[in-house]
Length: 255
Ligand code: 9D3
Image (cartoon, rainbow, N blue to C red; front, side, top):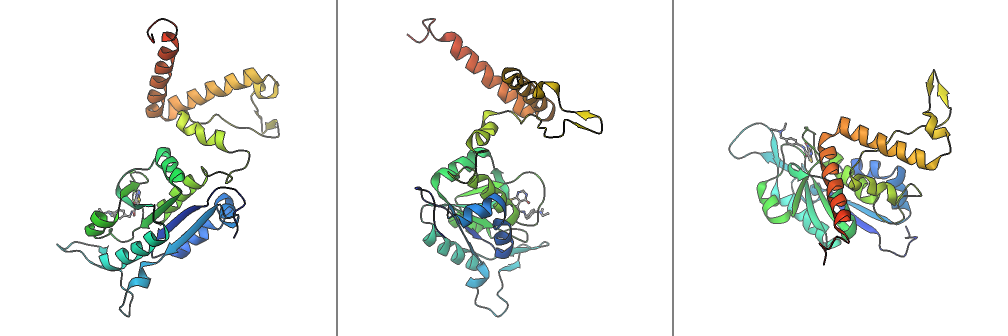
């Protein structure tokens, strides 16, 4: 595949015992197109390739007892060593319920760095000694229980890919900024003007761009206040700080 932009491709390596799951999802949509266009280089490494027993064993019972299996050090460490040879600058990210919550800020830093190694676990998790020696950072997708790190890895890749130059079309960078800007999106409508008695808000048909912008801003604020009081509080604080900075310019407090 060739790279159609001046910049380097984003390079991601996913260490997983289900590489076909990653590859299937990564082949479609915006992400798949970016891979085809050479904007993203995605590789998978299966720790099973670094086993030497007949059953290609990657898991074992937990010391101390209890239900569930734990992923063994040997195959994971060997897979991560191969990943680091392919991606020498990358941070090793372990997707884990014990991780810090993954945010748009993490996605931005990752996109900037240009490469990442994602470790997806299965079973009850991985041997702690891999976390201590081989992992740089742990990210969680949120407080709910999943079956493994593969879907979280795909979420991270999707969030990062959209931030890379050329990956999105015209719906691009302005939209990417809107989450960092701190408000949820306003409602969207398309044709027809009326469906089963539901009409498009009149202002959107008015052609008055100022009125439309004001309506969208008010809607974004209302939906944020209702659905995400946490984001709303942060946004209000940020607005107040911006207000004070404006007020203090030219009043001598900068002299
Ligand atoms: C019910 C199992 N739990 C026992 C107390 C612990 C547990 C182990 C392994 C819970 C989930 C998993 C597998 N999850 C992930 O690998 C994972 C995950 C998640 O479950 N939620 C949110 N983010 C992530 S990132 C990786």
